[in-house]
Length: 153
Image 1 (cartoon, rainbow, N blue to C red):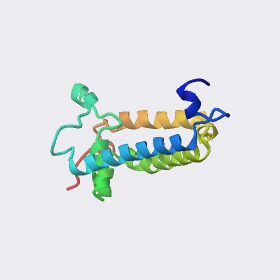
Image 2 (cartoon, rainbow, N blue to C red):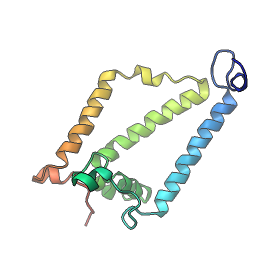
Image 3 (cartoon, one colour):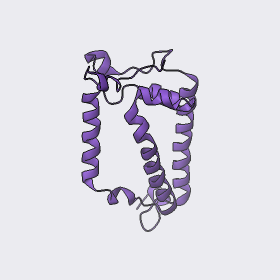
Image 4 (cartoon, rainbow, N blue to C red):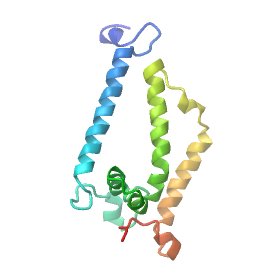
């Protein structure tokens, strides 16, 4: 390796620990700033977070209500968050756990092997669930109407 990359990587081709620490710190700061912004700026009061799919088609996408759900989670209103986007509330802890584990492993070792241990079939099933959820939440029959984003009374 030549030039600036020689300072970034060690002999084994792994990014050196100080640079990994800086990368993780930057990601953490970005998440903290984004969460702080969302905490103080309600998506319900200001229309800065708009779903383009809903605006164009009138149908809820699988992510509709996710911004309002995250806002509700940050304010401790978990029931309201679930009413806005149930799938997000179910998947969010698992996504956070997965990303946290991958990030910690990469920070400590410079390699990430967790993704390779997850069977590809799991990814296909998850994709099918998200697509099915996007379809089912637009059916205007009683149990399915509960999946549409709505305010708790």
